[in-house]
Image 1 (tube, rainbow, N blue to C red):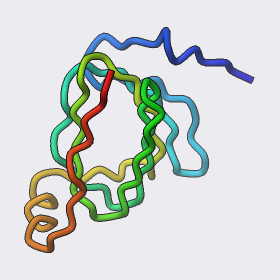
Image 2: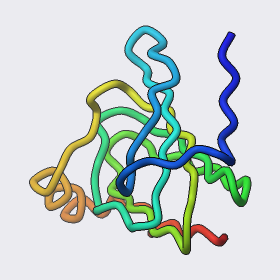
Image 3: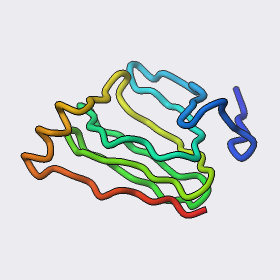
Length: 107
């Protein structure tokens, strides 16, 4: 068993991650950031929790979403391995109106 002290975790760059587990193609990662992430779309579902606030977010497959931390944040992310799509998918998603408002993390 591994114990991870999330409050002490930092990365050498924004959105750097610690790979915790791969559960048959579902990744569990701890991210550290102090910068926004770009708008993106996942082809699978994604659940992420902001550890500083206790807020949990669910983005259904195909939902455009973004994260904007206020200060440092540690984000616990569970998603299908390799499921992130980039700009072309975001443009299609906007045309379909499938969008999750930006999550702003409070320190």
